[in-house]
Length: 171
Image (cartoon, rainbow, N blue to C red; front, side):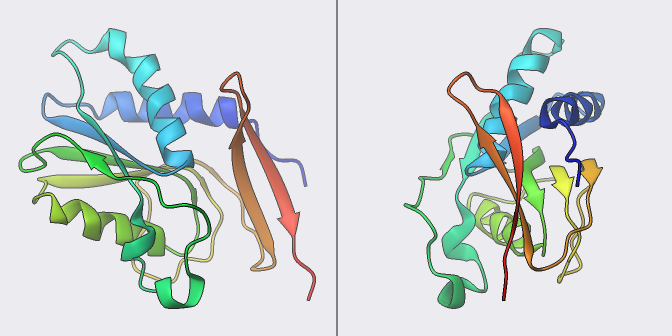
């Protein structure tokens, strides 16, 4: 399977996000890939913002997942950091790979612990199919339908360049 260029997908979602910016917009990245994307998006749009800076934040929604008992923690938890008032903000929640919807749901639950935003827009680099909850991203770079035995990973090299790898699990 030929995987898309994640740098090109990043440019696509950056343009879509930029079109939705309002004076009360904030960007929130979900660790880890969503934070990488958020930082790159912010670098690309910051100079074109007519109304000042955009508040940013990060979330690690692992402890908020409804399947936490089954999955456990994959890696060392990363700290969440929302240093702005969420109330009244139009939040653009950014993640790398959208699968079941459980990470997005968990991130929204954690976000509401900080306050009630006016709206939440979910932006993802790739929707891989397999949704289990009635949650769907609003902004999508690409749709790649994978089987449950396939896993798509986003990585970032030491220069900040994004890479995609496809892994297959054998039963």
